[in-house]
Image (cartoon, rainbow, N blue to C red; front, side, top):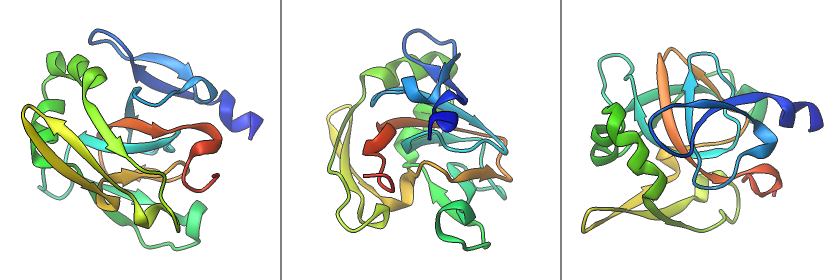
Length: 157
């Protein structure tokens, strides 16, 4: 675990520039940029992606380190968030996005929450959750907001 916490993620806390930060220093609310082949450093709500197979807001993840399954799985960003995350100047506003969620009881498949986008409340489900230890595959990039970090991550809690 100590070695994993020393790995580096690219994080946006203020402004529009991602900076390197050790996994162990991540905190809820951090906006994290992943590139193809990156391991997910914390439990993240997927905000935006480069898309996969022509599907905007979609990404593919390898979960074999978590569940032993070798079949790649799809995750989806909400369309309203995907639009926001695709504009570099808008990424800074993600730091102030209001997410409400509960620690999943029974594993990450039970994740649920709500995100405020303007005056709308949109539901979050496990379909938009990237769990620490998953690996981004066949997707150029993805951006997510950290909801659980360190020992609070769904699989470590």
